[in-house]
Amino acid sequence: MIEFRNVGKTYAPLSGKRVRAVDGMTFSVAAGEVFGIAGPNGAGKSTMLSMLLGFMPPSDGTIRVDGAEPRAFVEREGIGYLSELVAINPRWRTHDTLVRFALLAGLPDHEVERQVDEVETLLALGEHAGKKVKELSKGTAQRLALGQALLGETRVMVFDEPTHGLDPLWMQRFRELVPTLRRPDRAILIASHNLDELERLADRVAIVDRGGLQRIVDVRDGRGAAVASRYRLVTRGPAAAVESRFPGAVRVGEGEHEVAVESLESLNAALATLIASGTLVVSVSPAHSTLEEHFRQVVADTERA
Amino acid sequence: MSRARLFAYARWQVSDFLVERLPGVGVITAAVGTLAWLTGRPTLDRVATLGGDPTPVALVLFANLLGMIWFPTAIVAANQVISGDRATGRFRLLFAKPVSTRRYYLQAYVVNGMLFLAAATLLLAPVVAVLQVPWRALGGAAAILAAAYLAVGGVCFLFSALTRLDWFFATALVLVEIELHSRFAEARWTRVMPPFHLLTAQIDALRDGRGADWGELAVLAVMGLLAVAIGVWIIRRRPLAT
Image 1: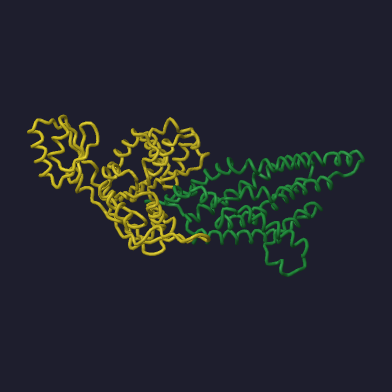
Image 2: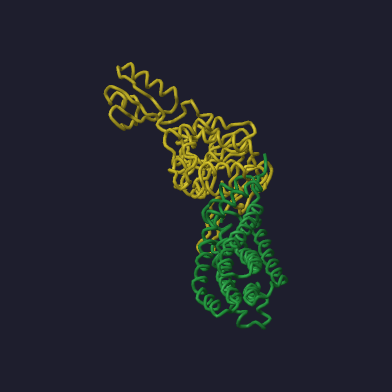
């Protein structure tokens, strides 16, 4: 559905030095897939998405969306897009904004009313319907921007930092929303700093840094399986009992240790001897998520390089 | 999969004009109109007292008013149509929808022009009534304002496709051309510039009670539409995010 082939982008301002924002990026996203993009600030995520939406052309390489140039695809079908910075005319009213975007999405009149009502209900925007955009809180403006992205029947959806500015309740609701947006003919891209969010929502996550695609992590493999190399262990009992069974254990709090293990078998064996010694194990959890471990590695590798 | 309903969207472009541009056009026209009435009333009263025909004086006042408003109101009606969306980043959500950027902005130019002409003509109507200018002068004024929008608005549209300072470059171009033409009217090289001076010539004709020169107004309209066409070509070529 979406294909980046050796895509690069160089910004060449009239004054100042040229900046290579994206370099040699190659990946594809299939229909039916939720694809995450993670990376630190300045990694090139926003440039990638701008090129995907046809807002700027790549300096080299090719991007295709359903076989077409991005701008041609967008003008033909549209993309359900939530931008990182929500820029909507501050004088527009909430309900009117949704109606405007519904018309631009090409919906017929009866669908405009139905979908706008649906989105207002889903995102609790009804009570703000008459307010101007400039009167909305950051979170409500973010919900409005999300709402307009849901209008229409798009085959590609792009969410750039979708939970930015949302309170924990709405973050959770967004996480519940994404699985309902999955369709066999739809590709969904989510760019986020929030690795936990990407790990929960995406099938695969591209980790980008310094303009390059560093690796793609298939988080479906790791979901629910203990493949982490470090665990957080909470116990009741003498700290020495933990430290003797887990060489290199680091005490991180009262009754809490971070331990390194080589395999699930060695973890379980060490826990068994710990429990047999009379120590109570309160909880065992991965110290970092799989994706977070990959991310840390990538950032460390690129910093070393 | 469906294309944007741009024709249906036009009502929202009307709404944007009414909220964002009409107040500017209204304030300029009302302020200058009031000034023209206040400064001209004593002369009109004196002519009436002496038993003379006040029409020529009223026409002078009306033409002076038109001479002061045609340019700033056209700029207010036409500026930042494209560059405003670029500068604020509003293009991102708009043009993620299945919208042709060329059609969207072309429609905005047309909507703004029609509303500008209607609003300016309506605002001038009370001035015509108060100054007791012949009503046919309002028709002449409307023709001049239409040509002003097509010409100045067209150039502004072209600059708006290129730069955030469209209003500045359009203003500079209009002022420089009119000034150069007033100094070097016979020089051939002044002919390479857009002939905005034709607008001031039309206002002079209105002042003198002569009819509009439709040929000159047509030249201005064609020039403006050519600028719009170039602007549309630039929109097609130039990336939205730069």
